[in-house]
Image 1 (tube, rainbow, N blue to C red):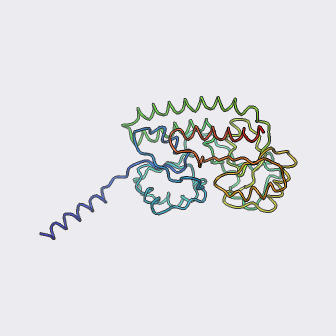
Image 2 (tube, helix red, strand yellow; image 1 turned 120 degrees about the vertical axis):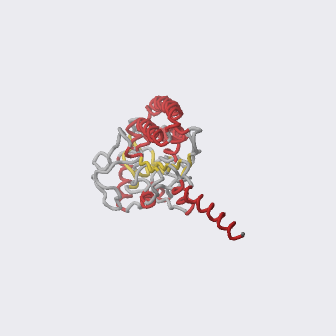
Image 3 (cartoon, rainbow, N blue to C red; image 1 turned 135 degrees about the vertical axis):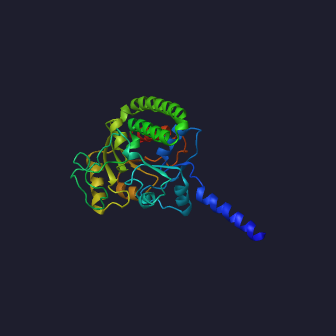
Length: 305
């Protein structure tokens, strides 16, 4: 009798493991999570993989993260170049996880990584350069027009996976797109007064935002976010700060402030904060709007002084 009961219990447990269906939507970084959440609305749970101030370049998966990835029905991420730490894991996910790489969405305005003389005076600093020549800059979500295209791509992908939610997705997408259009107009007016003021960023993550609002970034401290700057690089940036009369240098919460302090030592340049990922912003459907607002406020706050 006990043997039969054991067999039945074991069979039920085994059946649950075999036939368990992956559920939920998982997203790699916070800005993308915000856009997905806005489209999904109340139709499903949307989880965030890379939280807080962790960098997607160096993010280390915990066992619980790997389990979450393997058990999700859908996983959205930007590109192997951004979430480089996830490349091997994503490539080995089971077939029942719908893996969606956003950089492949149609009609995105993709800009090349800046390596020409208009960005870096001599065109090249080979020390610690982690980008392939001719590769695209993958921080494309910082262009509001790209965000709208991402939303449309998210809507299309999810509608093919969950056709029962098409109506909700389309309604939600229309609402968040209108909010982005309204915010975009407001930011253009807010940033007009600082568009000619030169400044230095920590790493070159903002050119989509700069081009959208005609801003005047003149260089970055890091060429590769995964490697510290060389002594030659620090000398070059110090010279650029002095020669081009940069008003501000911007640090990022994902990286140690020590590098910034070394670069600006002996200078009177002001220091601000820019964050392309919104580490300190509450995740959710409104997060993307708050991210763009924060970038605008931090730029004007430092450059208007």
